[in-house]
Length: 175
Image (cartoon, rainbow, N blue to C red):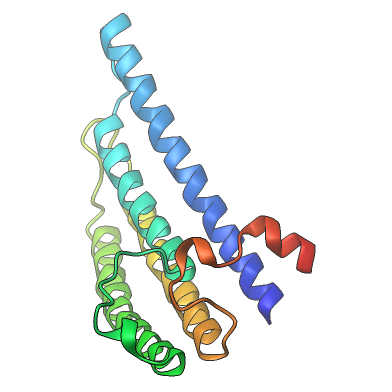
């Protein structure tokens, strides 16, 4: 089970990295085109903003597993580790509930864009595939947050998360 979770999370990290590379390349290409040949990449703004949304959601999925978020733990710092662990499980479960709602509403947005044939301004490209990519990032978050809850509840993850948890290079040694 742990190996499957690790592979899934590694795939999510790969998708997030590819998306950020695509956004970067698109923006650089458009800027070069605009300033050197007076012709930016058509629809670069629309595609970049949608890809940036996908980057955020897929990055959120990575955070969902790594647990590397900002937290204030003044209250829980003095509690025993077992109590802190269950408070973390509860907090991640609340987050999971809200991500379920987010996935539901984002699916409605993708469906709406598909039904209305919403498209970009310049090339009239349909936007629903890119909105779907954002939605898939939210769906991936469901998986990574669920994995985080499982790992916390079974004692396989650090309560603090972030850098204390295993990295992908550690996983290959344990597989």
